[in-house]
Each structure stands twice: as C-alpha cells, then as structure tokens.
Length: 433
Image 1 (tube, rainbow, N blue to C red):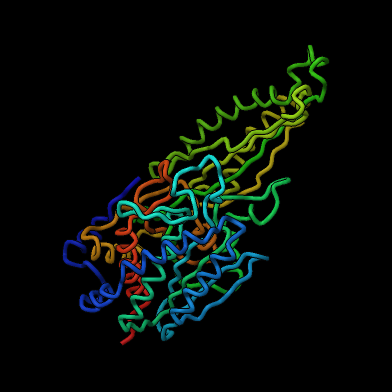
Image 2: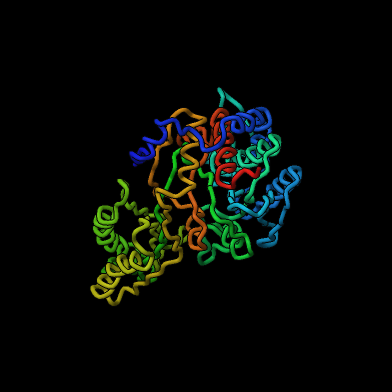
C-alpha cells in the first residue's frame, strides 16, 4: 500500500528542505549526468545475456566499467562461471560507507518459447522513450544508474568522506535447488549477496535498486517454500478397480481441499501493510506421462508462502505444519511427507532512518515532490543484508509493471534515478571540504 511521508517529513519539505546537498554543489553534480551515456550502457547490459548461473560475461562487463571509473575493484568468484564484482570509491575515512547493490542475473533466460515480447529477449530495443530488453527492469537498469551516479560525482570534483561501493552480484532471482533440479542455474535466492557479506563486504547501509517505480519500499515480505507429498499404489489401470482412491493424485486432491482452507485463513491472518500474505500453488507433479496406464506411486505439491516481516520463518513453518500433522493423523497410511526447502525472511528499515530522509530530500529536489512508500510481497537481498546489520532499503527505477512485451524502463526514469542516487550518496557519505 502506497504511503505518504510522515507529517514531520512533509513539513520539512514544505519549509524548503528540498535537498540536504548544497544547492550549488547539487546543480554541479546533476550537470554531469549524460543521458546518451546512460542509454548506451543500458543497451550494453541488456545485450549481455546473464540468466541465473550464467552471469560471467555480465560480471566481466561490470568489472571493466568499474575499472574505467578508477575504482578499487574486487572480483569474487562465487563458483565456476559465476562472480560478484565490487567497485569501491574510497573516501577520506571520516564518513559512513554506502553500497549500491544490484543483481546481474535475469528473471528469465531469454530462451523461453512462451515469452515472445521484445522485453523478454537479451537484445535492446528503444521505442517511444522506453528501453526494452531482458534484465533492464530487474535489475540491470539500477546497475546503470549506480555507475553513472558515481561518474557524475567524480566529474563534479566531489570528494567524499565515506566510501561508495557498487556491488554487482550473481544469483538473486527466486530459484532453488531441489531433488533432481541441481546446478548453478538453480542457485539463486541471494546466493551472490550471501557470498558478498561472508567475504568482507559489509558497508554501513545499502540501497537496492529493485524495480519499485521510484517508490521507497521500507518493508517486504519473506518467502517459505513447502513440499507436501503423499504416496499411493503403483498398479496397471486394468487392475485398479476398487482401489481407485489409493491413487496418489486422488489422495492429493483430497489433501488440497484442507490446504486451501488453511490458505484462506493465512492470507487474512498474516496480511500486513495492506497486502495479503499470498500463497501460491507453485507446482504439482505425480505419475508418468509416458506411462498413463499406471497409477502414480507418489504426488508432490509445492507451495510458496509469503510471510510478512513481523512473523518469523519458524512461526510460519509451524503454522502450515500444524495442517500437515492433522492430515497425517487423519490419513496415517498415505505416506505423507513435509519439507521446507526455501526460507527467506522478510526485511524492514526504520521510517526515520537517515537513508530514508536523504532519499526523500533528493527525490524532492529532482522530481519536485516527495516519493511514495510501499510494502511489497516480493523478496530482495535485503533479507540477507539486514541480517548482517546493514540497513537496507529498496528504491529503484522502473516505469510500471511488465506487460506482454516484457521488461522495459523509461529513459527519463533512468536519468532521474541516476540524479537522485548521486545526490543521496553525496549526502549520506558526506562531502569532504
């Protein structure tokens, strides 16, 4: 639910506090942001395919881009063919360190036959003031904005007290290994940022440029993935008469009725910030399509349960597990199984955090009005970062939701976000005199 700034914030903004950056310096910084360069890099990064597990070429591109800025660049090999790239612009050591973090892996591979729009392909297209292409929305556009915000600060001759870090990470997209689905193409859900913070990159605060439509996301839900399974007899169709109800798919059909009742209650009970705690039937499988003349010996149901930031993963797990225990007691001979194989906590940041104030002031300076706020049901790497004591906010460039044509972001949005990031970094890191 979108929320306006607090009354105190609105009062400050109306009183003329458009930016905490000196007006002359702010103008000097903004004058160094070049639309043509932003568009050029945006097209470049789209044209480098980087689905989860295949981020190497994108990492090499970012390594070169950050080296060209004269940054201290660190290459973190997450695993063979995958790496994080971290560029650090050192300050004087007298200020706080700010990280801009963005994932390089794309939501899709670009090879899906059913996704035909131009925005689902790793080939940039410019049309009607928009840049279309796989990854520009989630979230290569943010990596472009980070890079050019820092470049503008350099061109303006700014020297900061704190460090600015740009981290381009692998493996953020919501994917997970399970059973036969093994390999780096399934190792997402924050794997790159986990490696990042485990290996020494721990700034004071972080901005994640996820596609928020330039709204400040102070809180987001977590995600719990659950498998519920049941077994049945394996027998030829001709010999199952009288035992039809022992078919594992029929058994799962009965179980799903009880799960549906639980979902209805959970979505209401765990609602938060005006959003339902949605539960998705993410998958169901059972039987052998190549041998439909046999009853399936096992059927699996997969759930994605969205968990608000005020409920722990353990409490959410116990909640759905209570349903499983009741079903197992009712059907002791059905071979019921229960497993949780993803647990990504929700994340939040204080409304009065200095980073929020700086973003709001910079947004006001560039856009002429304060940003809206939102609570969202998707997850981000804030789940990882906040557990390491890194205050993190989601605030990034997008221009409305994806449609049939796929991912797109307005050129004007990218330019404006670059301006806001530059002014915000100057405020948070502190300008050295």
